[in-house]
Length: 403
Figure (cartoon, one colour):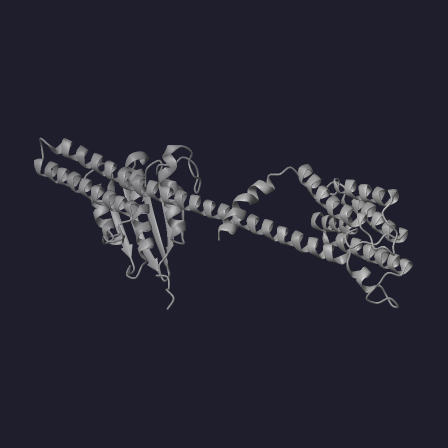
């Protein structure tokens, strides 16, 4: 365990060694072993002389450039190794320079270059062995060992290179996976921010508008019809309480309190109360329902409630209308919601389906986002003869859940 920890601490320092320093150290190590083998030869073979040491020097110096010119270094060290054999100097470690060079070719190259180099090295090694008659294991046949030994460092280098490529690929995949996780987290944060902004806009804009309408009614009737004034002020109070309740529900979601029961989701049954908040003001409101509205998903019911809420808020605040109508029609698996008024517009400038620029368009953007999230859509715009229409269509069947 201690040795493994020591190795882990030393590994970054080894990797931090400059390449030229590493090449000089490798060349020095190879020079030590090769020179030792060249200095002591079998008595029946040629002993070391000036030519032998010249080949040692050339081989060792060539290894310094093995990273920058791996193929030429293989040619130089291979020629030196063949020169020793042909010159009659036999040694166990005289082929160490070419072994290091062959390993470098494989570890820094690709598979095609490794194969080509292996074929040439094996052929040359076998030819030299046949020329000098040096195959101790099989003196009368093919020089099998001489054909095989050049392939060993190439295979080792190929294995190391393949492992490095796999590690780099794993690191790249891990980096991409981390980037994907970060993008997904950012996307979810953005979606949650948009959802919260949409909820706050719908709650605050509608409540403030309804309270303004009812406060105006109370002010106008304060002296002449105090009962109407009191009713309007009660409506202001109820609207404030409802806004506080919905804001508290939104804050509860933000705190992620799983131990608290979820707040009831505003739905179709709350539309009548929604319309009543604006009654008594300058806009005459009527509501029509056709069909059965049982079995709708909570998302669809919430989308209907918020779309009607935003449309009525825009009617009161921006349209200048005298009359407005809310219509809900369910036919088979389709729910159609329409909010029409006889004013100049519903809070948007432009034609049907166009999202307005600036702050005034947040409500209409929210309507479209809610409808799309529930599997439907929204269109809006002026109608022939005057007025403005908002139409939404939503799926009217609760989605099936898997067993």
